[in-house]
Structures are given as C-alpha cells and as structure tokens.
Image 1 (tube, helix red, strand yellow):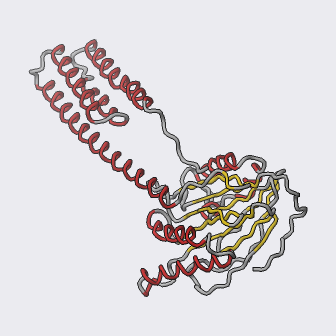
Image 2 (tube, one colour):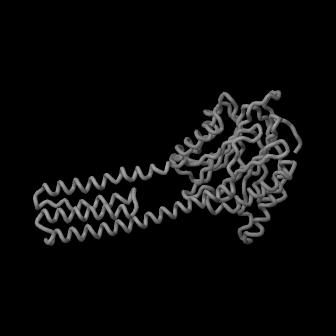
Image 3 (cartoon, one colour):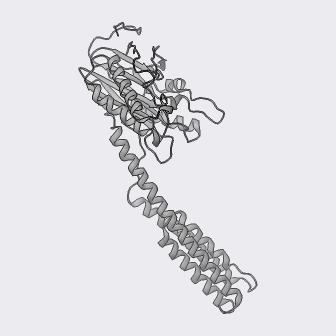
Length: 381
C-alpha cells in the first residue's frame, strides 16, 4: 500500500461553491438595504466592492463577473434612491466600482489559469511517479508491505528518494535509496537506479553482486554525463534487502544508507548493526558486505531514507524515528505508515526540508518451526 491523498466526490466542490456564493450575495443585499436606510450624507456603496473581491477565493471569473455586475447594479440602485445617478459623487462611485470589478475579474482569470497549470504539473508528477516507482504490492509471499513517500517540493510527488521490490528464487528483494539532491532535478538518477535494480535483481544470486552491478551503473552514468569538474558529485545511498520466503532471516547490503529498524511485538525496536560500504557511484570497485539477521514471523522491518531521521522541528531537533515507531510495533504496516506520516509532518510543522520515504515489511506468521534467538545468522558474503 502506498499512501497518497484522497479526492472528494464530484458533487462536493459544486455544493461548496454554491454555499460560499451566499456570502457575497448576502453582503450586497445587506449593504444596499443599510445604505438606503441611512441619511444621504452617509455613503456605504463603496463597501460593495468587498463582495466581488471575496468571490475569486472560491469561484472562477464567470461567477466573479456575475457578483461584480450585481454589485454595480446595487450601486446604481443606491444612486437613484439618493438623488439620482447624475450626481458627480454617484458617477465616481459607479465608475470606481466598475473598474475594481474588472480588475477583480482579471485577477480571477489569472488565478484560474495558474490553478490549471498547477493541476497539470501534479498530473505529470503523479504519472512520472507511477512510471518510475511502481506502487508496491500489499502482499508478496509471506510479507505484507506498506510504503510512504513525501516529496519536499510542493508540486512534485517524486524526487531523490526511491524504492522498489521484486520476487526472485524463493525470496523478496527490496531496494530503498536516496540519490544526491532532492525534488525534480534528482529524478533522472533515481530512474537510472530503479531501472538497473529491476533489470539486475533477478540475475544476480548474491546480494553483494547486485550492489556491485548497481554501483557500476551509477559510475557509468556519471562518466557519460558529468563534466570533468563535477566528477564524483553524482552518487546515491542504497540499502538492499533480501527476505527468504521460508527462512526467518533477512540479508542486507548497505551502500552508505541508514540501517533499518526491526520492530517486534511488545514495543521492542532493534537497530541491526550493518557494515556499510561507500555510496553507489563513489568507488566502482568497492567490496560490498552481506549482513544477515533474524527476522521472525510477527516482526516488521522498517526501511527509511535520511529525510525522515534528519527532519527537524522548530527547535532544530531531529525526528526520533526509533522512539516514535516503538509506539506502533503491534500495528499493521498500513496503520504504521499512517501514524508515522501524521507524526512526522506534525514534527516538522507540515513541511519537510528533504524528500522522505519509508517501507514497512511485515512477516506474517507461518506454520513452519520458528528459529529461536535474535542473534546474527552466519552466512558467507
């Protein structure tokens, strides 16, 4: 499951506009009635401009024009009642109100055009997200999966963070990574790494060999595209995880990426001790280490990018992911993602400074014999 915002039903926006339209219409009626009942030396007509000025906040230029026309008609009616519209004062008021209404209509048209452009950008960004990062399945083998992606840039739904899963040879392989940079400029390198993982993951038996293949892809990409003065500036951290279907273990190879959290029932959180190699693209001939840990049925493996743990609140304090995740170790992966999303955004005041991604991998109970103990399971790299 991938978390994303929901949409309202088609009828709700129209109902909302109709309800809000009562406010400017009511203002015109009230101002007109009050002005008609006041002495001739008191002029409330100029306040009619408030009605069309409010309308663009919830409606388009046509509705704004209708409200503006109603305000001008009301001003003319007031002028007729207070000595006729031929007086200098009333002519100035009517002309001024008309000019302000026209400007308000132009503003509303520009605002609507801008909203259409932003909607198009969001549509393209969402399409790019689906093309580059396919939605993760909710179930693969014995694993239940939920994910969360939060882009730092307002109009982007994908950026420098990435994740992918694939099944191969009785196991599930997962990639989570973070390329240098954030937002839209980092999409190209993220697409390269995702494509290389999907192509190479089923072909390499050893996880360390897969990491070496991804390292070579990033290095070749940088050599082909980067000018000499920027060599070494294009790299990505990555964590490769392999979870066998029938063995209660998980194998990991870290390329400069933060270690995951192992959540066990009873609010227990363990941080596996990894032996990370440098990020992908830094040294093409790096030796990658394989780390193996216990991963029992009922446990949840929480993968994340540094945009999560480096998120700061108004006092500059980092987000305490391990402490917060400990509250929800007994929840489903979907509920865990909902809790962390709400809690993380509350911590940063609603806006992240960097892209952030999380994946929850929950091993469902099986009838096979459980392996006791939580120590490392030795296996050659």
